[in-house]
Length: 294
Figure (cartoon, rainbow, N blue to C red):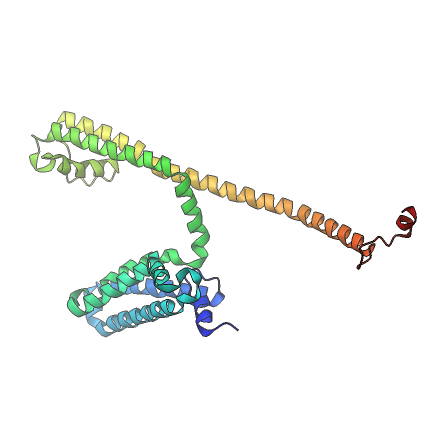
């Protein structure tokens, strides 16, 4: 019979497949999302003034629940050989969501004890737990495979965009620097214009005024449409290829399933028939024809 610690670990393990454990993970995500919503609503003055005890109490209760789960997970982790001993527990603490919880918990108590005006605002980091929903694990694995497969293409795309931003900002510094020293007086200052223009955001706070500067700005905008669209197209192509691969594997598995089952049945029947025609003690054939022939 498994011990209490083993049963607890089967529920609170980071990658648990236990039904109760997956429900607990979903509840954690819901609670974390509610805390993010509470932080957002607390920033509204009339709400924070009308319900101060509610916001503070909800924050403290949530943090205590996460602390309890954190301690229980550390207590039960030695039942898993991967997290056994001091090194194993450090490995558990280094997991992304464990680090996230630790940062939020420590940040909350520091804010509560020393910075009353920023009570619990660090809890917005918990929004990252939306990616910890068990039913999204398959999509996360697919996303990792796509990034790994398209890594080199993405590096080229982002490098080209960065080079275009730097080159266009440098040229704009030489073209517009004297006309607008407050906006283009240095290359780092011109980089703000370059990034805004290349991403086609166009805030309009910094614009070229000279004819050559406007020509360069138009060319930069066209280049931005081309280069900054590359990463999204690379990822889209990667996702399409990955989905096609998954569908192909599922189709091959469905087609080979009946054939494999039939072959296994035939093989088992042959083995059973052979064993029935032989003596269970000496292995000699029980077929009288075979005996006569010998």
